[in-house]
Image (tube, rainbow, N blue to C red):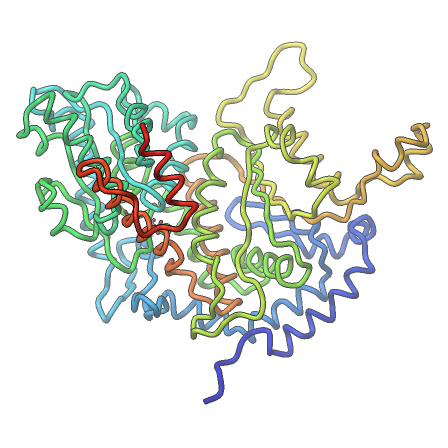
Amino acid sequence: MASPALICDTQPWKDLKAHVEDIKKTHLRDLMNDSERCKSMMLEIDGLLLDYSRQCATQDTMEKLFRLAEAAHLKQKINSMYSGEHINSTENRSVLHVALRASRDKVICSDGKNVVPDVWKVLDRISEFSERVRSGSWVGVTGKALKDVIAVGIGGSFLGPLFVHTALQTDPEAIQCAKGRQLRFLANVDPIDVAKSITGLNPETTLAVVVSKTFTTAETMLNARTLREWISAALGPQAVAKHMVAVSTNLTLVEKFGIDPNNAFAFWDWVGGRYSVCSAVGVLPLSLQYGFPVVEKFLKGASSIDQNFHSAPFEKNIPVLLGLLSIWNVSFLGYPARAILPYSQALEKFAPHIQQVSMESNGKGISIDGVQLPYEAGEIDFGEPGTNGQHSFYQLIHQGRVIPCDFIGVVKSQQPVYLKGELVSNHDELMSNFFAQPDALAYGKTPEQLLNENVPQHLIPHKTFSGNRPSLSLLLPSLNAYNIGQLLAIYEHRIAVEGFIWGINSFDQWGVELGKSLASQVRKQLNASRTKGEPVEGFNFSTTTMLNKYLES
Ligand code: F6P
């Protein structure tokens, strides 16, 4: 049987491989002088400005990438996603996170059933429940209002909600809505994280939201049992019904745990964990903190990008353009990493979230048809807000390895400050860096320029910057709930585009299983050694030695 076609066997892929030689002869210093080219590499959609003119690419490159997208049947794959086909074939599931932010009148089907009414049923329940908690009509077992929430969950049941919460925390409208309330997260099974999450909180005024798609994740369940104990020890076991609620696709296990199923908020197996922030996973804790109307704006922002992704032609489609450029950088130019550099402290948890969405989705070595990939898929994502990152790893980006950068800037600060006598406002100071860094990377600095500046000869090699380092810039009008939703959806879809082109399944995550099962073997051993004094057995020399050392005390 002939093996299924891989994208690298297509003519557009081969053309792009050959095209690398053309691009190697160019330098961004020159490419940036071509204003026609630059104009064609800027796009404004729904208040967002994308500028990808500092990519090591020409209009010819873009044409070739569009042909690659055709060869990969990108349009058909996007349509299959929106029409609820089981594109997550290894788990036999639809991939419909777009339905989570669809307006009420939309029809999006999974297995022949329109899922939008189910989505809104849960959203309406969340709206009603969060309002009851926030207004104090739902109270704890001692009659006190629940003003603090601990969201217990890990991975996709944590990182997205944390990113959105962190981004909203300094938004003026969200601040007003969150007055007197706290939202905390408990993710790590490390008991230190438990201690941090409950420090200063009173169980009488705390609501724990246990968030787990499967309701089997070892870390989350132990943390949930730990909080259950914290609540019961202080208020009695009957308090659990009033102080613990759940978000899960597994309502049977929620009930078994002891949480009233009436206090459970469902989502569905067609929502991947890392794509679940727009389900009850994010919407419940965020609505408890900020009220549903703010969260609804976030959903609308994501939905606006969903429309762009679904219906815009590729040259006007932000996620498609970004996805194709990532493919160009990783698979053709050989730059496997990407730095996510938001010039906004409010976006400090954006890169950690995208790390999971991107690397758990596309960190694959096998095609969706089970064929070993002869090329590397996936991207190594990392990032920090500017300007902090500048004082950390930018040295490497400027003079060490070539790492394509995403610069994300905001026109209007959430928290403007202008000090009398200062040259510029604090936000302008921040944004001066946002505008300067991409050019520093693109243009670099030549030995001739340094000579003209009378730099001593021996320092010239050290002060030379080769330039020609690609980046793209995304300018958001502001950072309100709507814009945060836009940003989330851009990256979610960009990552899907990459997976569609590489021909992998971006929606499964089998790679996380092996570590989990080995941990369970260690867990059994620790129990047997601690409770029955059994010797460490069945591990290699290294692990046995380490375990013995650990158990010694
Ligand atoms: O780390 C693996 C993973 O399965 C992620 O995909 C998921 O987001 C996380 O664990 C948490 O899973 P759950 O929501 O089922 O607890």
